[in-house]
Image (cartoon, rainbow, N blue to C red):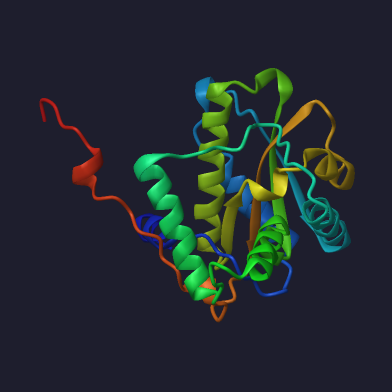
Length: 222
């Protein structure tokens, strides 16, 4: 797929077919993605690729933590709280998703089910955990983790795959470390659900809006 088309067509996928992604395809995606820019070429990222029984057990363990009401405690916390226009955009997204999923504002049960699905990587057949060594977990490394995550998502489009870059599955890092064998020295930054999109899943019809460039760009001397 042509790059500009991939950038414009990429979206967060929240419903997947159960078919696992071949290891060879996941390898190709990551081989492409590691060409992403990083601060001073430090390439601070590490990947743990999950599927099959390991991922199934992790999903179950994460859901158990959530349903038990365990307070989230991500390695990179606390959870963000947005205000103003940023909060408005967050709320608008949630409203659009809940409308597509027929989740009423007062339906606490369905809202909890949806949050549990988020925790379970939206039931994707594969997931990628992106982590960084604790000694390099500074601002520039976090910026680099953003570039690699975006590049993974774009490369996946080329293979007919969908992704969702998520914080929710990494809210309980010790559960992920135990299930995925990630050492304590690695700080778990983000989870990426990956798989073949189920285009009949209602939430996948969403195309989130973007602010007009005129509202966010300032030009000087151009």
